[in-house]
Length: 139
Image (tube, rainbow, N blue to C red; front, top):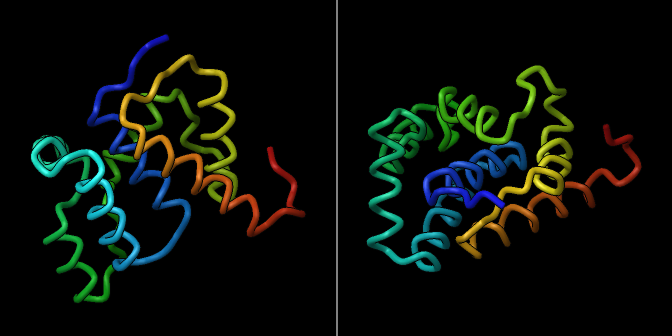
């Protein structure tokens, strides 16, 4: 079983958050939760690395984009594509079912999470999304 790197796990968490929906307040809560649970220093180092690689926007950028009335996800387009590459997901998958594809792939991928708060968030979010639309067909 291959262990995911910290930055891959955190990026997948923000990918999951994007497909769950929500806005700036949700992102801010997730950012604070992960920082507390993972450890401020460790989390900050990973976030700085992700931001320098252009895979996420920092919280300041997200806040500025929100104030400007722009869509304000944490993951950049490059970050979203990086998750597709990490997890071997198809980019053209139907957006409404992206979390279903993520769930199915995580079950069969032999990828291991080492950050329990990230893993818990991802699976909890996938389950919440499934409960919102329980009668829709899943892929």
